[in-house]
Image (tube, rainbow, N blue to C red; front, side):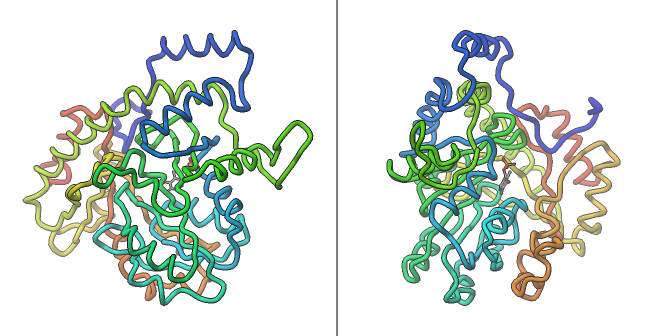
Length: 371
Ligand SMILES: *Cc1c(COP(=O)(O)O)cnc(C)c1O
């Protein structure tokens, strides 16, 4: 990557010498995967940091979604959002489940609880919402509907690392929540992910499922998969946990600067922090009103590129517009007006722990039409 390019994010990397020391330990132990020492320590440290009762780490953030659906025996139809990364819906498809798209609430970007009930059919078994950009969904209303109809709730919380509402982790909402530790996320292990569950029995079942279903040397209790995280990445994650708070605070400072500079700009909209919420500033989405701003979203996006600023249009296109899902009855633009509008107007500006004031100004100059 050209040193002059400004990327939308940058991976959180541990100190190389400290990482090397941990690699030395792995080499000495000659235990590289299958619930090793670092794996156990990483899970314990994550439970403490995230304030969750049980967690099972995985080799990426997609397998926890697929495994959660397996563990809860989800079938038939699942209500979900089209405004997300495509893995959310793919996890349903890989389980032979029919996705039913419901529009989003423009105030949060998450699924609109007011539209869920009318999408429920006798085949509906679960709801899979996404805390998109780490903004908490309307979890209480979602749970009320789930309880009323006997549905499971699995949150794709890939963006929601460390998010708390009134001091309580958002990851304890619903039946299960999944995390992604991909290099583009606020907290990463290169590739990696996790499944947060609420009781020990379920944790045990998940641990079997991510290891082919093995419950002992010769006993296979379920048709499991290989979702195990190795020792190298568990060590990487342990080190990153020590610096993630500083990284989040550095991102917070970028968000403060962006908001201050962009507030007076006609036709550029963005979100402020929600009261009582601890955010992680993983993304800084802005929404372009072409009429007021005098430029379309795509015109601004390509102008940023011309200036070496690699912003991203997360989440455009909508998942419901991809060829696999386009033909579904719920995939129409008429059914998804808010999601369609958001996908057509969004740009995520560069935000990460190492974005310098000079680079922040370069981004702002283009959006503020100073360049
Ligand atoms: C990143 C992401 C995933 C997938 O995580 P991987 O670790 O890349 O497999 C799933 N859902 C959402 C919303 C994501 O952003």
